Image (cartoon, rainbow, N blue to C red; front, side, top):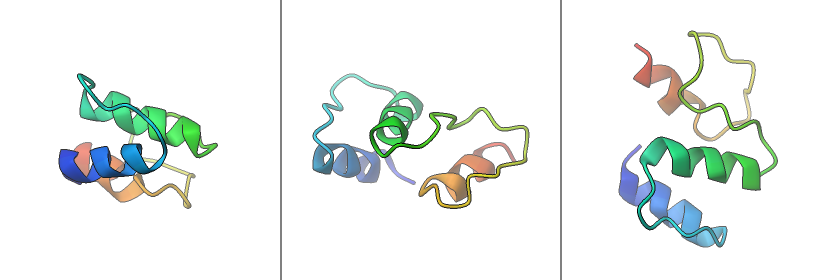
Length: 62
């Protein structure tokens, strides 16, 4: 997922994305949506099937 896409999602949720790293911004989006803010912390296993960042997160660990 590209940073541009993440910024668009953040903007739609009323989150300021200025000066934030991609992973930190995604975690903030996860919290805003009521999910665990666990982006990039997985050990290759993830039970958050409904998370919109799941595939991106798991592919970053590959």
